[in-house]
Length: 360
Ligand SMILES: Nc1ncnc2c1ncn2[C@@H]1O[C@H](COP(=O)(O)OP(=O)(O)OP(=O)(O)O)[C@@H](O)[C@H]1O
Ligand SMILES: [Mg+2]
Image 1: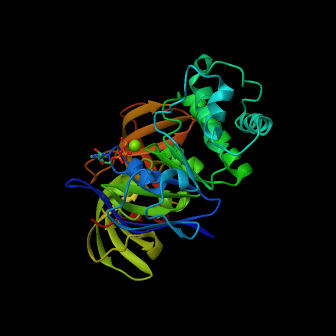
Image 2: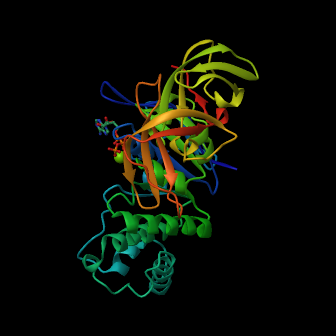
């Protein structure tokens, strides 16, 4: 069931076109993310859904109702802001109960609701603590509990985890996913961290310059980016030049350094025409062939140019004849597998099925 529907939404700040023709449908119970570089309009889009910004043209419907002229406090949404504002001089319970101050509930009912909301975010028993005696991760949970207590249909989260360090952020990501499944509320998460978006979302809208570049589930976005821009923004990608000779259910393409290839039409999700084309290859779809190793895949000679050891993985840059920029590839560090030195002559195995044709 569609819960939120944006049609042709445009927003200007003076001369600046901050949102461009946004069409978007978000389903009831969906975990939806807005992903994009700084300044692309993520917060602005979230604020228009929440009702903090008017739209210039287009419409926003939530739960079947047109939101034109409906103020933020009358919308079935609640927002957790980019810089989470909790009140340091209040206790944890007072912070969480803040949103209920005008609710038509008895004192006991409010106390119970606060207790439940704190349980939900894993802060049961912390109600009496001073809010300024909490860690960053705990404060973020307080901000979440304060938003959840009003039982919104939609929770709007603007980079809620960006202030946290890596370990706690990853832990909170998992907890947020669990929480969202439990409460069944629709979440719209803003992030500029592509990994966070991939991990957490049912669907992701990638935004550039106020518009939506691509909207898909994480796997489609990663495996079938529709443009070079999206491919560059999500994960690591090697780009090669090529020339499409013929299109159809199979596409005939000559790839620099790799030669003539035949790929399936779905490997060109952005549609390509005969002529120059940009070809993407993910590092994990390339592999080094160690001494004496054979493969049923295609192979090409290469020289190791750079080695970056990550513990579980090693990233190599390798030079291949006919390709100007080194190719980046990643290898799992299995037991008994050597880490090669710079300058080593080697071979790289690759596969036609992992090429993505991106147009220009
Ligand atoms: N009230 C405003 N008045 C004028 N310009 C604004 C206003 N709010 C935002 N903008 C501009 O609109 C653009 C989009 O801003 P927005 O805050 O939506 O970006 P964002 O994608 O959330 O970026 P970030 O990742 O840095 O938070 C920016 O260029 C910003 O300067
Ligand atoms: Mg923002």
